[in-house]
Image 1 (cartoon, rainbow, N blue to C red):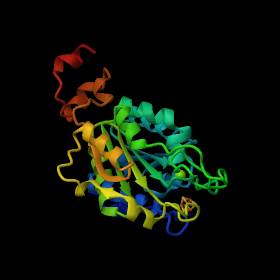
Image 2: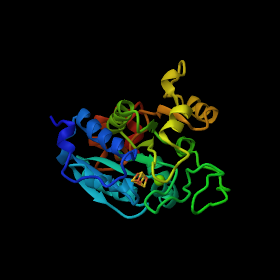
Image 3: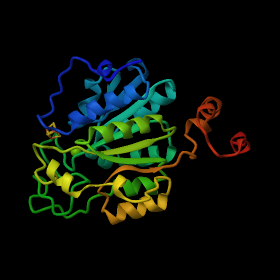
Length: 283
Ligand code: SF4
Ligand code: MG
């Protein structure tokens, strides 16, 4: 049995002091240990951006890929070796701008990969430009008069694309973040976990204090039921996407692996799906 310390290596992150990504790294290490994964059974695939460096900071298999392409690589790794727990990670620019096509199709495909996005609403590595997650009016070097584009509500987008696991957290809340990543690893299918991970150097609007004031925990909403897609969508709309917790989980949606000939017997043995066996036999 591994502990989170087994997922540490001797590479010192070169993130700015105070960057939210440190907590995400710690949460992945803790969640993997809690889920009973050992380093040689974990692969972390990342894209380009400050957060993309994370694959080098975790003691596991790792691949620092190209911009926006963490998900195609991660899905290939999973299909080539289904014994591995596969985590894909990167920033909001990586996943929701250049990589958005891959994000949508990985969501609907439902391959058993956990995708963790470190969402700082800006491009940090290139020194502060507007991202698809920046709010309208946000001033950066690329939008000196304020962004004239609306921010993408990624959680609503994920629900619309047919996601089977959608969660959101804040890098300050290590306990919740760890628990959500652990749930994502254990989920049989694609899990999207968006993490508000402040860029302390370039984003002076969406700071730790800003998130503390503006985020609502789903645990404070009476009778919130994460198996209701309708309630998930309504809640996101009511709170402008600024909620944290497990937003939606559909345990009955078969994973991609469960529908692929040659793989499905093995996958179905570990996935408790409420569909008739005959439906699979026809595929
Ligand atoms: Fe983190 Fe921003 Fe520094 Fe990049 S520039 S390491 S996102 S604080
Ligand atoms: Mg970013």
